[in-house]
Length: 79
Image 1: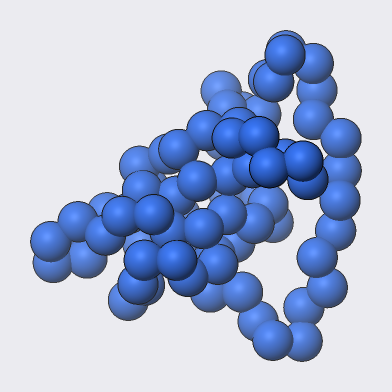
Image 2 (image 1 turned 45 degrees about the vertical axis):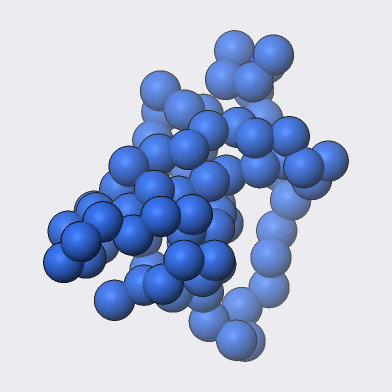
């Protein structure tokens, strides 16, 4: 179960949003019963890429021993 403001990791690509498995986002809303979560993904500058409604299987907690990685978004995904 996740809480608001938890950092989470995508477990799958979300091509229409330009996001890839392993991208990190923050939970900004938890639906009742933990059925779904609104997760915000941002650029390094803090610009919102998107806020996606995701199920628990689509995200996982970020581990304390994991290293964050930067990658450049493709222009079509974020102009």
